[in-house]
Image 1 (cartoon, rainbow, N blue to C red):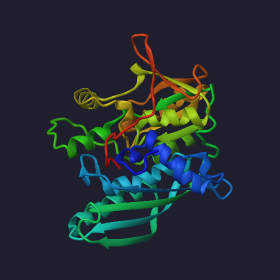
Image 2: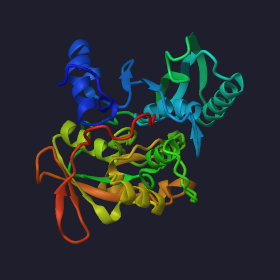
Image 3: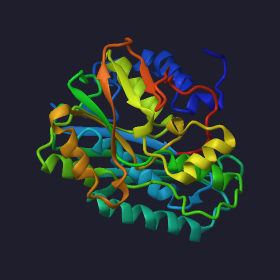
Length: 332
């Protein structure tokens, strides 16, 4: 590991995992933390607990802003453990000179997204720092949720599971890059930022068995699949032609050399569902407006230990590795 922190250490990929493992996990090691889930399961499996910080640039982008992102990010982590988001804290660090009008827009979007989840902010903290000490505004949200469906875990995936993705991938990362670089795209491309609890609740209410869920944020679908392969000691094989990617994201990836599977998402999740329930889960997801493109993209095997294989439509295959290097800074 390098002696200083680089932007790559925050990418959700290999460097980020190394930093977490060798610094934070080493210091804070305990049975709950070592499970490496999207949220900690506490209180004898009745509550989920998660925290996240948000530093996106630009603050406002097509489809959302840092406020909506902050609520969705934490509520989605709770939902990935089968929990209903209930209570959040909100802490903000604001740069001197930040416009009150912009702050009000951010807070309004947070309020609206809280209502989608049926959650409330019950505590918070505000700090104002001198100009230049932060980039406009940083937000941290911490959440507690009531677990409705127990035993969801990325450590329990087996060959009886199929791998699904809830919608087309990469929209958030592509949108942020286009906005940050001032690319004038005359398209409908916008961030997928959205609360995922309604979809998870629909899956639970339909009686579908769920093995694992994970929202594909930093590092995208590639990071999720590689983490799952290692945590459950399995091989995951995905079919390239089954992965939903919209034309706008494909265009940006082709133009700039990005891998859509490594682009960040903020309203897209990956599912491991037992084979007998996978088709039903797909049908439930496709009842939601933004999940019409939900797809079964792969299966679990034992072909290569703790690896992810991408099968192309031409019959070739390659390992899909966890992202490395500086991917797309300030995407969440």
